Length: 505
Ligand code: MSP
Image 1 (cartoon, rainbow, N blue to C red):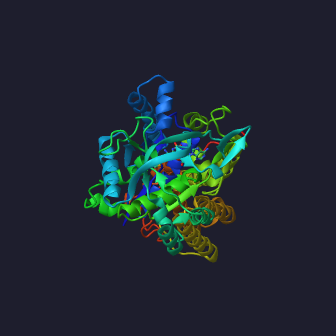
Image 2 (tube, rainbow, N blue to C red):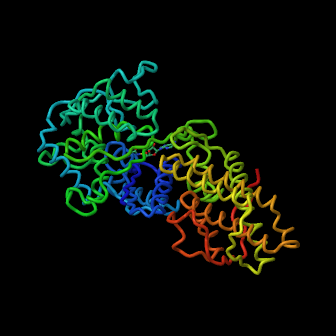
Image 3 (cartoon, helix red, strand yellow):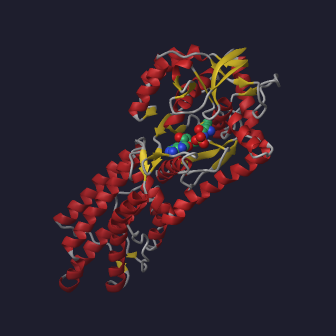
């Protein structure tokens, strides 16, 4: 089975911050999960390098825009590896392959009679790279701005328009027939009511600056940055060659986006795609926004969180784990150092780390580092194994529905139950009284540790890889095929090192 997942592409007007890291890690989690399901995954990320906002940032730095984006794009590309994100492609909208794809897409819209030339007069926010109706703006001290405080300019220029108003009915029908395409549900309702409020034709070209993909056959115009940017998802799978194997395998895609850019992905993008005779997206998931210790994250407040620094302070897997266990994916969350320490200590150091540490050390010290398979189970054993099956089923369900925090919680509950089982079965006492029974207990615990670790791979890939290396585990076992079967060979273990040292709270 094929699976195509995308991050939004990031504006190269500044360096990456925690919000960008969050979106990319979320896609990595879902991508790794689908890879463990043995799907043929394509995970795409990249940078959005055109438009007025980027051009302005280059001008402010007195650097030529191309040189400017070359420099800034590298920071985003490096961040992907730094965050241990297993992306398959990194696209830049200034690449030749993308310019060809975007212009071909434009030509297709033109050929299908979906574009016309006219004049745009209205409000534009460079910060959001978005057109606004006056009714969407608020008046603060005699000046109009967006509800989220972005400044707007009144612009009047010749512009190409996309016939978005023709897509009201089609989009409503499409979403009413496929209500699960947009998640969470509240976002679906929001999009549907936006469409039902009426769609106006959309300006899709600009003439007052040059930093963009040129409109074919009219060099006065550059494409509106959003039509250019959205096309990246097609570029990466060989568009305009819709006959290519890559295109056939991977379209339509799953898009993960922040709630701020849902409208572009859930209204404009499907309409563009329908207009170009292509299938609309398979899935659009909108995640929430992070605040920093209760405050909106913004450059002017000086509270932007640098992903490099925060990872340096707490560790990468600790941050990945925090971001996705602390807050339901889809909700807003508050970033606080105290919350990171608490969460990491409770779940990773105590619940997960200690279990591994005490069991593996015990086996190394008392069982010659190996445990033979034993299937002579008591009621207590069966209870724990049934609990494992239940938690695993929940985990799959949650992951399939992008409920990452709940999936993690299922694993953590399983680990708590396993810790309780260790305490009640007390293998250290069994060592003195019943060796055979001790072996069964340890065999079950090892199985659960291995399986919980595999379930945690998408969230904390590098730590789980260390844990798995203690088990000399067969590679073919790392995945969800035949996952419920217990290991049927002797498990040898290595002496573990502490993986999640406690953080000083
Ligand atoms: N270039 C457009 C996307 C084009 S996709 C065809 C863009 N870029 S962005 O760099 O401004 O934002 C990219 C992502 O970062 C968005 O999904 C946005 O929601 C996310 N975040 C930016 N700040 C954020 C937080 N404070 N918290 C969580 N995510 C946030 O939009």
